[in-house]
Image 1 (cartoon, helix red, strand yellow):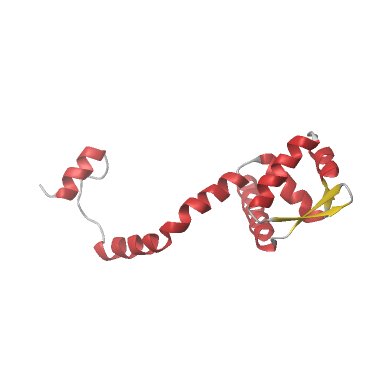
Image 2: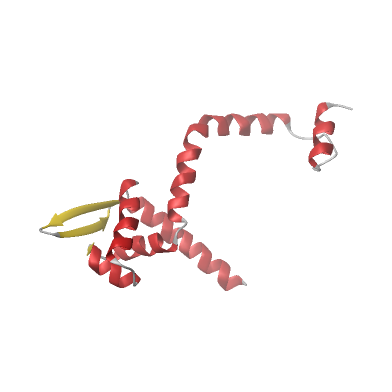
Length: 130
């Protein structure tokens, strides 16, 4: 029995040792080339995997807003809202300007907004097809 068959039987996977070596090697090489960025991408998706932060991004796509306005939109405290804004700002998607004691936030990453809106359209289409 060859190694592929033994591994497949142990893992409960496919028991037939046939695969396209060229295709597998090509994809493995492509993944290896980008391996260094996957941890950062995963962290970025974790950041976006929060409803509050998504709402903040979509709200800021409409207008520049102060922390108090965002807190009222979300029905959250200013402290909780500030924390979420800091997380988003640390990833480079938002800019902040101070006007006296007020902090105003703006979505700076147009590509991020385009991607989010594309994802939203995809989900809406999926829901309509159910």
